[in-house]
Every structure is written in structure tokens, then in C-alpha cells.
Image 1 (spheres, rainbow, N blue to C red):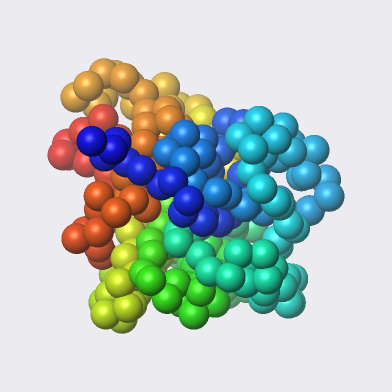
Image 2: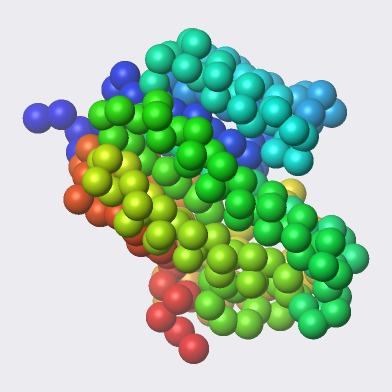
Length: 257
């Protein structure tokens, strides 16, 4: 009997590897271990030196620059997917951004420009990717994004990213409904606190991380490998009847007040 999570021959695009400790890196490793063919992006030339060791270690077939704020880069990426592979089976969106001055202040004080930029990079880019991936997923597929429980309850210092992640989760549900008839499934994965470079931008995140292991039922911190295991399952045919969900991988923290 083949393994439950089998991505042999599946073509996957991983957006958001920053370094070996990033959530996207943990997911990419799980995808690779399940047999997937992978491509990945790096933000810019400065970031490439941190991403290259991960992609080389995992045997990722090709990489490309992607800053979703730069006009034309996202379209060029998906054109390269079409030219190289002719199709796509799954995609992981694991990027988020908010200007520091807006992220570290009160939500009610955030600027219109900062709010719009955070929404564009962290949420609307997922819609843009879905629109470009849709014609490449003629036999169905899976679109995955990464969220956080600060979307549904107030987490101190998470601030602006709370409303942004709430929008991302709602977006994933509407996408699931609209793309479901084409066999394209959509999920938002919600990890507990993990020490990543992106998380370090949140004010006093180290305190949240320190409390997490003691607070959750399993008394263990979530690791990027835990997120990767879930992502690989959701991208696989084993999850073909699951869509439109926000799935926690947080040691049970979501059940607590």
C-alpha cells in the first residue's frame, strides 16, 4: 500500500522561504519528502543567500525572484511555471508584511497606506496567485496559506496583522467555494507561535513564544516540521474531500480561552 501522504510527481510552488527556520522551509521539506517536484521563490538578491541553502538541500528544481509589490513579477513567475511544467498541482503562500510603524502601534492608529500595504502583500497577493494558478490546475489542486489565531481573538502586540489575517481566512473560504467545482481546494493553516524571522518583527514576540509551551495542552512548542506535515497532507490526494478550512496546528491552544 502506498504511503497516505504521497506527492510523487506533483508540482508545487512554495512562496515565502526566508531561511531554514521559516515555516515555508518546513513545508517545502515535507513536500520534498513526500516526493513532490518543487519550485520556490526568494524575495530579492539580498535574501537569495539565505534561501539557496534550503533549496539546494531539498533538491528544489528551480527558483525565481518574487516581490509581490513589484509590478509584473508575479505574472512572470506563473508564466515560468507554465513554460517549465505546463501545469501546477499545489501552491503554498507563506508571506506577510506590515510597515513597522503601523505594526507596532494601535490598530485604530494605523495609517491608510500601511493598512492597504499589509492587506496587499499578506492577503490580496493570495487572490492574485489563485487567479494565475487556476488555469494551470486543469486536474484540480490545492492552494494553501498561513494564518495565526490573532485573526479571531486579540493577541497582545499582534496589532494590525490580526485584521489582515482575518481577511486572509475569509478570503480562503470564498476561494474554496468558487474554485471547488474545478477540483481546486483551499486551506488556511494556523500554526501556534514559532520563532521565525517574520515573527521577530512583532513587538515582544519572544514573550508570546515563551508562554506558549506552558500554556498549550501538549506542553510542547510547535515546530516548522509540524506545519509541514499538515501542509503535505492537505496538498495530497488523501485530503481530496477537505476544503475551505482554517486548520490549527498549535498543540491545542485554540481550545483554550
